[in-house]
Image (cartoon, rainbow, N blue to C red; front, side, top):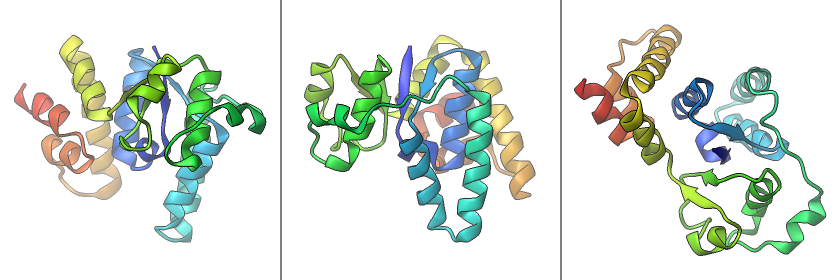
Length: 181
């Protein structure tokens, strides 16, 4: 399954790391465009100049981890698409160009299901996607989440609980599932 990761799920860090951890295990193939990665860097810049610098370093690492994930298309390719927010048309164009199965996003209103269905795509919210992976392979997803938790603790110096970290990352169903076992 090939899934485009919208910028809103690439930034924040914990959500991105759980998604990419799931991709590394083989649950799906991530797809993005250079423009989506640039949106991530610009979003991080709102944290200050160091935020953008950190994001650009993380982007380089992510591109090295997933060298085949980036898809490009001509700007003119976007002319055949319509979405309620014209600034998101590039995400739809990336998904079509990549022959993706869906777009993982938090922006429900920006990606109407009927428009995506016309292109053979599905809008997928990250918590439901990750929870479905957990249902199929609890041990695998728990390992992914444990690795993300360990990195969060090491980087922040805080003693995060799994449930608190995942809930803060807007992954409440996954948090509840992983915390139960």
